[in-house]
Amino acid sequence: MLRCPDCGTEYRDRWRCECGHPLEFADPPRPAPDAFDPDPRAGLWAFEPFLPVERRVSLGEGYAPLVDAPGWDAAFKLEYVHPTGSFKDRGATAMLSRAAALGVDRVLEDSSGNAGAAVATYAARAGIDCAVYVPADVKPGKVRAIERAGAEVVRVEGSRGDVTDACVDAVQSGEGWYASHAWNPAFFAGTATFALELAHQRDWSVPDAVVCPVGHGTLFLGAYRGFRALAEAGWTDRVPRLLGVQADGHAPIVCDLHTKQRGAGGNDLADGIRIREPVRREEILTAIEVTGGDCIAVDEAATGRALDALHKRGFYVEPTAAVGPAGLRAYRERGVLDDEGVVVPLTGSGLKG
Image 1 (cartoon, rainbow, N blue to C red):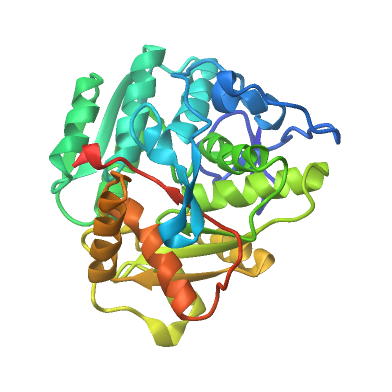
Image 2 (cartoon, rainbow, N blue to C red):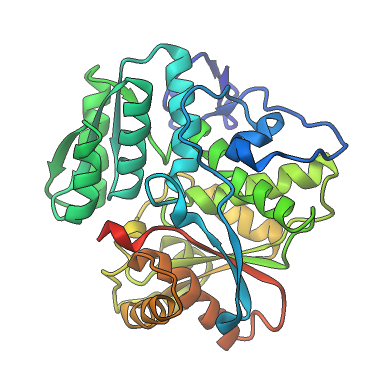
């Protein structure tokens, strides 16, 4: 069952509450207080005690490497090594597993690329038809990944919001089940495994801070939920500071927190996080407040410099993934971070260009 945390209404299955609020699982699992030793061979499904869905659709995703990054005085979690080349596989495996459990035969998604590729691929794995609504100017490499998985690509002129509106119209017309990475609670259950893995890779400790790109906040909020679940279960002793990074010109969370720091330079390189109206905006702000975190914006020049530095050190990522390291540098320049233990997820592969 799903429940609206705002009005309390429960549903067996629905993409959004009638009141307009995102839904959550009514009875999330409560892991035992004694930590176990997960088997990385099971991928992220090694953490089934934390997952509210049953494993049905999987490609071996999870346990992305955690490696030292001396040039940044941090550690990088290589989320770009997942089956479709981005962290979105974490959410897709959980969401499509739920769709399969419900007997869904066709899914619809709106995406700037990575989520669409993940949903299309996992839908193919499940034998479920799929259509992905994308911006008209989406990168060719991402379209190829969607099409080669057998999904229909629907190009939409206009803003990223126009793409979502077109997809929602199709859902409301009965054309398919809304496999939305921004709305579906199963997707966030999947991305929460980022935090679970990270703690296990660090022998059940958490870093001082995590610096993470923020568009709709699917990884940022997943990390918050995962770290909070670990602390509530008593497996770890705290939740790290969560420090978000947005693209200049598309930084609504930054504007909410720092009205005098509204960026105007723009950042077209970071196309994966150019979101003006995050669905779970208030949740992102709450996660920042609770963890003593923050959110800043980085411009295109800073993102480009970070991308070049990553490539020269062997981290072949797409431009949006460079936002995290660019933000790490900016946070240090502002004195927000000193010599603390920091982890930065590298979110998408450079092969997607």
